[in-house]
Each structure stands twice: as C-alpha cells, then as structure tokens.
Image 1 (tube, rainbow, N blue to C red):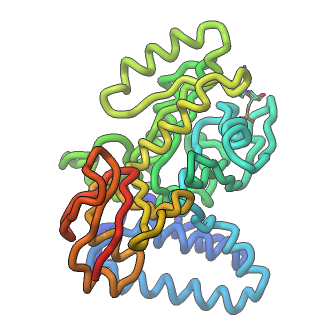
Image 2: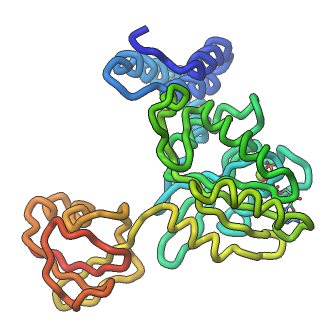
Length: 327
Ligand SMILES: Nc1nc2c(ncn2[C@@H]2O[C@H](COP(=O)(O)OP(=O)(O)OP(=O)(O)O)[C@@H](O)[C@H]2O)c(=O)[nH]1
Ligand SMILES: [Mg+2]
C-alpha cells in the first residue's frame, strides 16, 4: 500500500469484495474514492479505482449507469446542502416545507431510504437541499458518504423532543466515520488527522412546539453556539422557517454580483454567485475567460459605494454589487 489509508476505507473495500451486483460494486468503489486521502501517494490507487468503475459501468450496461447516476445527486443551483440527522428528526418535513420536493413524512423512523433533492428559493437564487436517509450508529447507508463529501455545507436536524446531545453525538461520530469534520477547522491532534473534509454546518433544532423542547434547545445552544450557527424551528407550526432560509444562505458564505453593459440596466434576477471574498477578476472569470485575462478596470455600483466608482481587478466584491467590466 502506497499510503496509510483510514480504516473506513477497508470497510468500503470489504463491501466491494462482497458486492454481488455491478451497482453495489460501483457504490463501494465510489466510496473508496471519496474517502481516499488527497496526496501523490494515492494517485495510482485512485486511477485503478476509476478504471474499475469504468469497466463495471460498461459491463453493467444502461441499468448500472442509471443506478450509479442516482447514487450521487447532480448539483443544481448555487449550492448543494444535504439535510442530515437521526431518524424521525424532521429532515423530510424540512425539505418538504422549504423546497419544491415532497419526500415522504412519517411518524415512524427510517421513512426515507434514498436521497431526494429539492430546490429552495432564497430571494433571487436557488439552493439545492438533499433529503437523506437517517444517520444511525454503525449502520449508515453507503450512499451517504459520496454525497456528503461533495456537499457545500450540511444542515444537521436535531429533534428537540428527544435528548439533543446524544443525537449530536451520533451525527458527529457517523460523519467522522466518513472522514468529515464539521464546525471550525480541526487542529493537528492525532485523532483529528484522519478528518479529510471540513464542512460548514448549521444546527437546526426542530419541533420547538413540543413541551420541553425549549429547554433542550437551550442546552444545545449553550454547548454549540461557539462553533455553529443554530436555528430553532417548528415545521409543524411554520415557526422560524424564513429565518432558517436566511441562515442557510449565510452559512454558504456566498455573494451575489450582477453584471451590466454600459448604458444598460443590470439583470437583477440573474446574479453571478461567488464565494465571499471574491475579487473583480473572479467575477470576470465567471463571465468569460477572456474577460479575466483582458480586464482593465470595472465600474461598481452598490454596497455603500459611490455609484459607478472605478475599481481594479483585485477589488473585493460585496453581496449585491453591480459591475460593469471593461477590457
Ligand atoms: N410536533 C412536531 N412534529 C414534527 C415537526 N416536524 C416533523 N414532525 C413530525 O416528526 C415525524 C418525522 O418527520 P419526518 O420529516 O418524516 O422525519 P425524518 O427525519 O425525515 O425521518 P426519517 O426519514 O425516518 O429519518 C413526523 O410524524 C412529522 O410529522 C415539528 O416541527 N413539530
Ligand atoms: Mg425522512
């Protein structure tokens, strides 16, 4: 072995060896790829895995290709945000309430067994939420890791009518089994070295309408507010949902920038979405590669600046800025 692979890798490898069908084999290989550490020593192994996947896809034919496509959900909109948590916490209810999708909501646990995407509108952008099967100690479904590893951020749903801390414990343990760390970037301690993917996360305390839920929310808030944004909601009552949408937008740390051509009005329905801290040159790259290379200056409107002020390529943009690019 060219590298010290995490134990989780060998679990996936075992699943691969034991898998009987092409889609199951592909799923296990995908998972192995996703949890593989990123450095030169793994290049060879990665290529090998990709080759195996390609071969299986050919042999398995159309059906395998379709099933594989269903494994990892294609990102749409400004960001992809899985909604995760323990059984019955209200993940499907949230996706139902915030997006155009209608996953099954049920009183019984494990109602959701696959990933269901839905688009959430926030002002003038669309954010993709993914309803997911529940996280359970030791038996989380294999289709979760590849989708969570690719996520832009995570929403963790806690059922406030149950003990919030044991739910958080399950969630963080299952995530670290996928080499995913949440909250503030981890340090250098031995245990944390195996974390390969750091994700921003928002904790949602759901079912705040139930008696005793406020006390549980206070406990959760006190323990986690230094590391995570939190939002209390009740899907049943419709409380906190607008605040939640804004909190999701803020979690993503993205800005919206609008372009205009000289003498014309900008299209405020069609923003360019960029990571917070992006410069004019980044926006230009999004518009067109040539623009980025030849950009001389731009004029900027909005975010407290004077109208049409001139700015250079390294100028840092703000949410809501309108830019006019000059080559
Ligand atoms: N009182 C109350 N019940 C809620 C609320 N949100 C969801 N529920 C109920 O909680 C139960 C579980 O909701 P789901 O949305 O199916 O939960 P889930 O997390 O998707 O569950 P799994 O898919 O099984 O993991 C259902 O009976 C919902 O009606 C809420 O805000 N208040
Ligand atoms: Mg569900």
